Length: 124
Image (cartoon, rainbow, N blue to C red; front, side):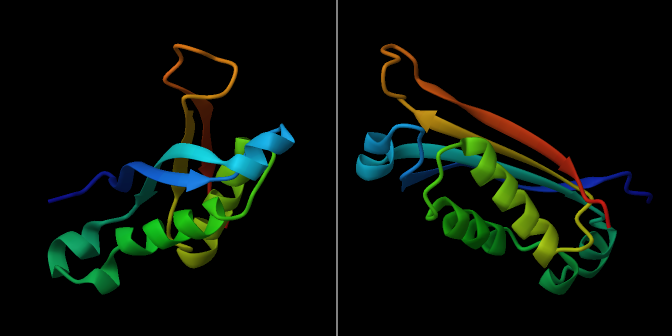
């Protein structure tokens, strides 16, 4: 068997955080949904059934929680920090896609969410 590519992901993790351009947003906070997808060679994990050969999604969860806890004006900044932290921990991750959605954003009635998607390629 030849595995072309593999992905590890976290989908729609809801976190209360303090991001936004307006001071009030960083003071009061709101709910955000975060999804992360990483591309990596999963061949060894498939063959060996060992977490030592895999990207641990529990560790991805911890990275997301840590970076979301740092208030920022822009979600682009938060997504970039999450991406860089993943690349720092997992040198063998080839690509990441981080989606952050501010749920029910202020001044946008009827909008379920607004946010960013950052796709990055590891330059190592």
